[in-house]
Image (cartoon, rainbow over all chains, first blue to last red):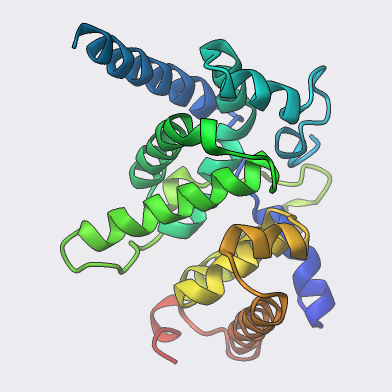
Length: 47
Length: 206
């Protein structure tokens, strides 16, 4: 039960999404971003 | 788990500032390190902002790509992660505007928001916590975007007021006013739920 604004605010951080727990977002993002950077810079080097 | 530890770069041997400096010199491995440090939290913010896991992940990738293209111009007047969050939020806004129906963020894709049960609580308490989370999640997603972001950054992600105002490029007074309003709206939604056991379908548009 939420009886006050203070209690409500205390509950909010528990909503924090933790993609690292079972969903490797950071790895996937790093791989995709570095692949795109390499492709971009590769194609720039060809011109 | 120390939430936000990647954001503050604590627990890392090298500070964000030093890694950013290397990346500014064109060091791709250093930039990859920054991606790995900050991707999870940026994704979490954008997931709350967009309510759509796929959209949030694509905006996260695009934000890092834009950050790489602009990193030479990053002068370190703000922290790297506030600069990055600003790029990410602008990217999510741009993408939302381009979508049919422009600008309205999607409903929550709740399957992608991980629920962590407090294992110390009994079954009844766990059920109550789950119900409360659901009410809070819905109340937050129903907030107008300009109110939702202050609440997500400050109260969920734990940024300081000055960090959050930097991300949103708002004056402190304007930020605090939006945050206060957001908290009040969420509180009212929770109060209504507790007072009347209001169903999910009945709380929109108030």
